Image (cartoon, rainbow, N blue to C red):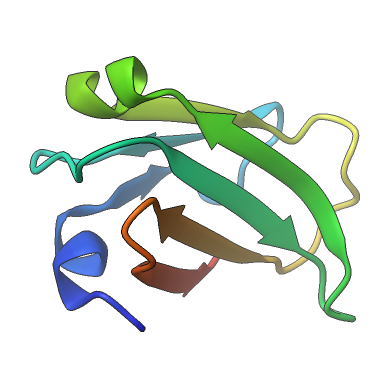
Length: 88
């Protein structure tokens, strides 16, 4: 399911990212989240689990230094099965 609450509270910066993509959210979802980055061909190029502790702090970062410049899709998946997709 696509969760509008995650998308509404999620901040992603900087765009474009050169070394890291930073994510912050004021309303923390319960449990860990998984961040997945997909390239324009739909290949997953990065995946990272953010611990429940960092989720409660409202912050995570995804390394991007070794990725080619371009448009990617970020999928944020929450432990309860909800998810949000945003182009970055």
